[in-house]
Length: 43
Image 1: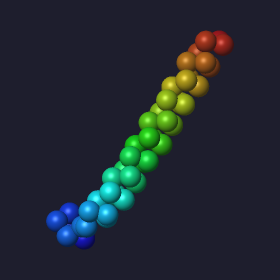
Image 2 (image 1 turned 90 degrees about the vertical axis):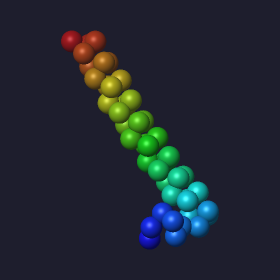
Image 3 (image 1 turned 135 degrees about the horizontal axis):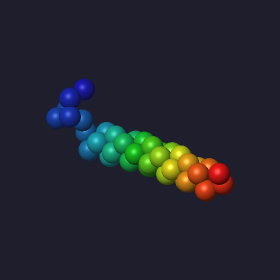
Image 4 (image 1 turned 180 degrees about the vertical axis):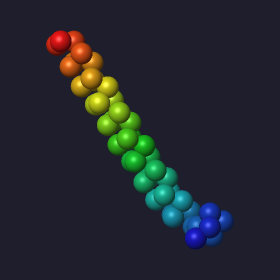
């Protein structure tokens, strides 16, 4: 389905999914960063 054929509701749903995915990936990156800093600090 092309972007032009998507309804307004489909666009909102897609945007919400993209936002959720971006927040999940960002959260994992932050978690790995914090774990790395903590592990470096204990050595």
